[in-house]
Image 1 (cartoon, rainbow, N blue to C red):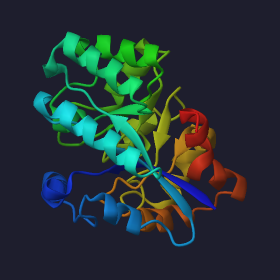
Image 2 (cartoon, one colour):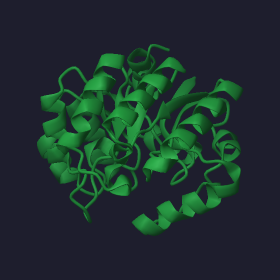
Image 3 (cartoon, rainbow, N blue to C red):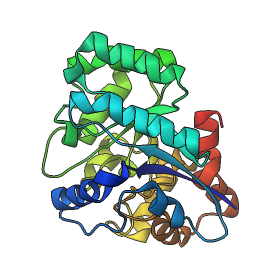
Image 4 (cartoon, rainbow, N blue to C red):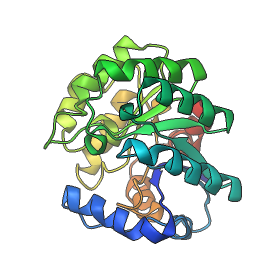
Length: 263
């Protein structure tokens, strides 16, 4: 069996645990991982060849380039890591576009944005040049979507972006809307976007998770843990209980990601 964990975050060792705990404090959640690459790899499901899409959305413009360099270097040192870069509109349009060109030339596979942490609305116009550039460079964007406490990343805003940029590959995390899955079902389930299933079970039932994935289409959903919130083996055990066929599991666990990223 093979697995690609499409939604993980790693940080440099000196700041990793603090960064992980900050995530927990923001969401009021216990955090299973410590944010390090070593712990991420150590908690791959036993006996399963596992690769990891690694990312870290830069919360400030000054953190974009160092954060991207860390992820690119981590992937250069370990072939299990598939790097997704980041940008922040506060860099300025010229600088953000140049950074996207730079990371694409260095072999990143996509981009990660977390509008709630970055304090940007997912559909604000100053992001549009960067969305167009990502489409041009064939860099998919993994968006954090959904937060009942903010309006930055609502499923409705995500749908607007997907409709406005049909050439941009959109991946809506958390089955299209963490903590607002009713809105996700209204605006994103069945839309022309990909999704990962991170942080669905246990926050919604197994039946609802299974139903949402089936309604959206198994061909457009990838497995994800959202490490360090959950370790990969924990998230895998939750999803593996769902009654998908072996062929469907192959798609969710690695086939869709391989096709999407050209692996």
